[in-house]
Image (tube, rainbow, N blue to C red; front, top):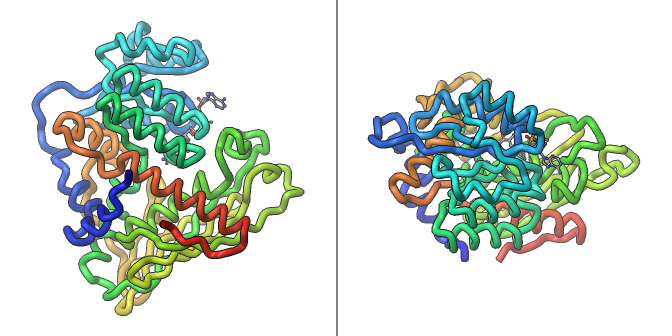
Amino acid sequence: MINKNRRDLAIATGSAITMAAVGLPARAATPGRKLGYAIVGLGVYGLGVIIPQFKNCQHSKLVALVSGDPVKAKRVAAEYGVPERSIYNYQNFDSIKDNPDIDIVYVCLPVSMHAEYTIRAAAAGKHVMCEKPMAVSSAECEAMIAACKKAGKKLMIGYRCHFEAYNLEAVRLARSGAIGKLRYFRSEHGFTAGNPNAWRLKKALSGGGSLMDIGIYALNAARYMTGEEPIAVYAKETTDRNDPRFREVEDMIEFQLEFPSGVIGSCMSMYSANQNHVLLVGDKGRIDMEPGTRYDGNKLWVGQDRSNPVTPPPGPGATQWAGQLDHLSLCIINNKEPIVAGEEGLRDIRIIEAVYRSAREQKRIALV
Ligand code: NAD
C-alpha cells in the first residue's frame, strides 16, 4: 500500500528529493567495502551508460554480468576486471544466490522482463535497482514490491534525474519561492524512433509507446517539481497507424495533470520528434530547463525569461549515475529507504495506466 501522504511530507520538509539527495553523505568516506553490482542486460544503457560509471562511484563497484551473449560478456568482463566465474546468462541467473560478491542486481532489460528479473533477484537474496519504466503494468509493479519486501531487500527505480544537479537546483528554487506561487507546469519529451522492429515499438516487450519510455520523464518531473500527486488526468493520443513504427504503440500522447493545489501540468510525449523541455510558471516568474533531463548539457534559467542562466551546485555524486548507484549502496549500508523506491515507480505506472485509459475513453480520469 502506498503512503499517499509521503509527498505532502516532502513539501513540508522542503523536498525529500533535494534534502535526501543533496544531503547524502555520498562524498563522505564511509568505512567498509564497496557494494557489488551485477548488471543484467548489456545493451545501450547497461553497457554503454551504466557500466562505465562505476569508476565515478565511492560505494559501488561492478562485480558480475548477466548476458545472453557469452562472447560479449567475456569481452566486457575482461575490460572491466570482472572474473569469468561471475558471468551469468538468463538460464543460470538464479545461481547468483551463491555469489557473495553480488549485493545488488541492476535490471537493464526490455520493460516486459523487469518484473521477472527483479523477482528472481530478490528470491536469490539480492537488492534490486530496476530501470524505468518499472514494469508493463501496476500489477507487475506490486508483485515486484511484494517480492523484495518478502525477501527483506531494497528496491530502487533508475530515476537518474533525482540525482542530477540541474533538476535538484530547479526543485530547490521552486520550493524556495523563487518564482512565487507555482501555477503551471509544462514538459515535452520526445525522440525520433527509428527501427520498427526495436523492442520499444513492440507492445508485448515495452508495455506501450512513447509515454512508457520517454514521456515518463515529463510525468515524473511534474511530480517531483511540483511536489504534489496529481488527482486527475485528461489525455489525447495522436498516432499514424500507417507508419510502420507505430503499428503496436502510440506516437504522440498529450496529457493534462490536475494537482490538489490548483497547479495544472501539461505534458507531451512523442516518438516522432526530438524535444526535451521542463517549464515551471509561477505568479512571480519561471523556471525553465531546455534540455532538462538529458545525460549532459542540461540548461536552467530562472526569472521572467532566459536572461538569467543558473549554474547549479554539484549533485550528490560525481555524475547523476554515480549519485544514483551510490544512493542505493548507502541505503543498504545505512538501512534507509531509497528516495525513488519501488513505490515511486508504481505511482508513475498507475498514472500512465490512467493516461492511456483517458485517451481511450476520451474522458477525464480521477486518480483515487
Ligand atoms: P537495449 O535494447 O539496448 O538493451 C536491452 C538488453 O536486453 C540487450 O542487452 C538485449 O540483448 C537484452 N535482451 C534480453 N532479452 C531480450 C529480448 N527478448 N528482446 C530484446 N532485448 C533483450 O535497450 P536499452 O536502451 O539498454 O534499455 C534497457 C532498459 O534501460 C529499458 O528499461 C530502458 O527503459 C532503460 N533505459 C533507461 C535510460 C535512462 O536514462 N534511465 C536510458 C536508456 C534506457
